[in-house]
View 1 (tube, helix red, strand yellow):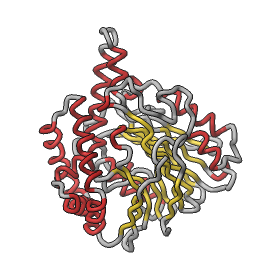
View 2 (view 1 turned 90 degrees about the vertical axis):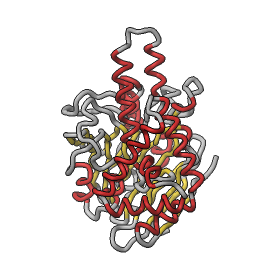
View 3 (view 1 turned 180 degrees about the vertical axis):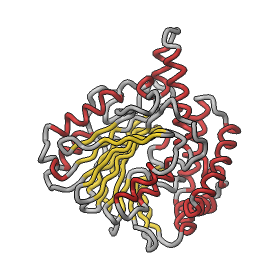
View 4 (view 1 turned 180 degrees about the horizontal axis):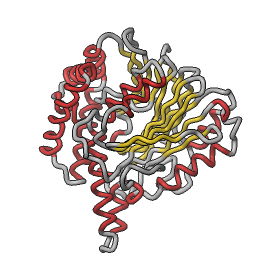
Length: 380
């Protein structure tokens, strides 16, 4: 049972990145090694990965100068090349493109010997998320939550980033060492997000559009709820992803996005849940459930666990739902599966519960059944 590191930064984008790189230089190098092993396990070798990283670096510089400058600071502070930091910041696009290709190929060969084993070895992301409106919660606050299931090698190489700014909203988020854009987080305007990995047969249609992690940061840059949706809705995407975005005072929407389409899900009875497959049409063929059928039960299981307390859901109820082991080893609360190859092995790397009205994010550093949540405020 361990806590999670906190880094508080201020100043301009380069200064913030420099502090990030210096503090987590070792962890950044470890994350690079983890991803290169994972990419190689799917047939993308080091040279190919860095060729892609170079293309992504150019795209990021062209699309968001501030984000690129923060990446430059991370590179300088950690002693890594800018291409290496771009590899981490575009790792979602690299990884989920591979996951989608593997799922398609494995599903197409299900009649072949060892097809089940091939599907099981893909080991994609397995996040489970939820959003709660005040009508569903005991304290009448708006909440978001997520169990972030990802590569075992990334565990222990994540941290809570608290950014104090004057030109844009200050925020707190959970991120990986080397990635400028945090995933789960909230800002001082009460805007927050959690998200899920998705894969579609349409992925790759729009090469080198704004990468996933940059869009996550842009959500946390927003001062209004409408502006928080724009990073997802307003420009084409390279890969699919799901974003649950909320704001204090009772606003929550779930945005399913694929390269050329965005659809939305509204809470029912004040609750919305999601996992790793599309729940709406218009996105092409949804791929991840072909490799990870557990996504089909996790979304319903999370809703069931929360809905039984509907109208009075407390943080204790949220914690209990996050520790659910139904369907082990691919449950809401996931532990490493020794049957998987090490490079593909996944676990609940972190879990978050976000109280948007209190401007507070609770973070467990690993499976929440084994790790206590720590509270982080934006102004703490």
